[in-house]
Length: 317
Ligand code: GLN
Image 1: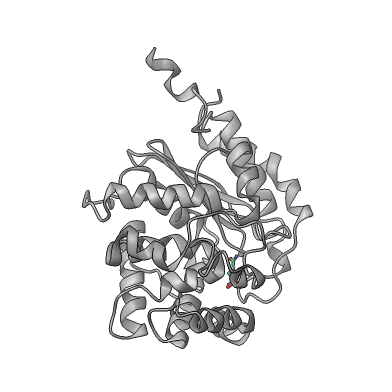
Image 2: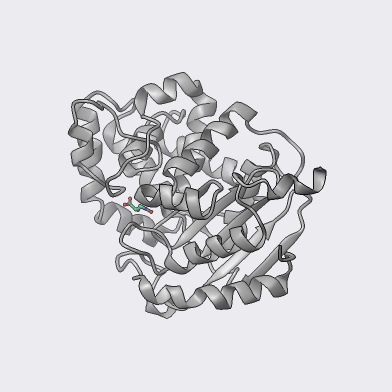
């Protein structure tokens, strides 16, 4: 087993960077361009808040789909597990994350899970608040507490692009409205979803979210913000669906809960061990960062992070 250090992370990054050539940067996201093609940054934070970082760890990108796990936590807080999963399923989906056809399957009646677009829009419609602004500020305040970063905000230009390029998400949302799945007004659910996607964050912020899930839902000041049962639910859903229709592959090759976004961001959460944040914009056809994914596989192997292994408990025998 390798020892975690900044030096080790630099080496791991150099090993993983060539995989960026297998991906493409999503062209319609403001703040992201071809200059970011070779970019790879990582932050790891341990439960006693030791921080390890390497590469372009400070580069911010829009959260995109990594925002879906925060929305799920808030909805679970607001309504509890039974009510949330009346609105959205908890099963993995074999189709792409913005699939429309899966919604119409008579066997389903609701989106497959909260990690795909339709599921996240349903979840967004559950988050409590009088107006979209109230709901979004609850969302942002929760994220600021988790990441200990009061500067976090939505990028207006990214938000405008989400709205202007949102035809597919609008189709999903209006279909959900037709089946009675949405709790709020359809445009309100979409607006909150677009805002969540547009929050800018760096790898350290992503790592803090992973750590929050990994160490019992405490903010850095020691306040417990979310009960264990909800944390377990979120991590299980991340493991089975967080990397979309490559989640099985990541469960086998990485073996801990992860959530990706089309900005090339990934949140990793190794229960009791560490939070990992990765940013590398080129993504594969399923929407996952190619170099970021390669890096997670390497970290899992070198640092023995696979939760299905017995490596972590070897020392205790
Ligand atoms: N903004 C993207 C969308 O709604 C987010 C999807 C993603 O990151 N996979 O399609």
